[in-house]
Length: 172
Image 1 (cartoon, one colour):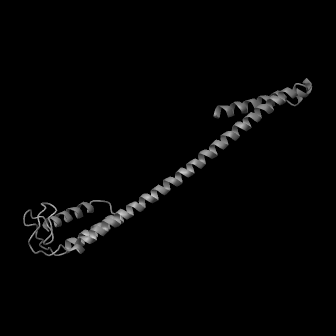
Image 2 (cartoon, one colour):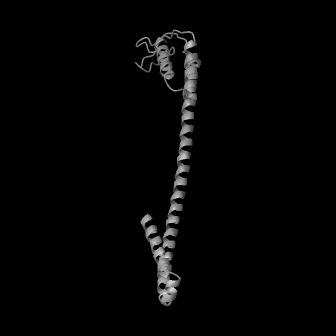
Image 3 (tube, helix red, strand yellow):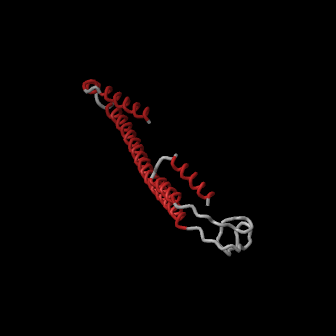
């Protein structure tokens, strides 16, 4: 059991160096509880000394042991196993949450792209309408006498509309 105790102690020391989210704290508590258990001598296989139960075929050397041994207490390491399972479940839940957030952000990005495309199409439509209106003002204004064209400063209005068109095309 010394090897398992040393491994548990090393795992505990490694976990203590990490930042402390909830599942790391639970694993640390389970390791501490396991290390506080009294040390039990576990006998091994007659041939390779691999820990096992009495009269069971050894998984390492394949022979059947003849010693009578007490089983390794499972409750000691059951806490470690449960902490690992809980940690895995919490990590899976965190991954699901992140996946959902990513999916939501993708939906938002798609909506914003569609909104930007609609705004661009509307801007192009309004710009074309302004060009058409400017041309119509210029053509219809040509029928007015020079007096009325100067009185109402028709050329300044046309030039202002053309400048607005040039600014809008420069931003595109």
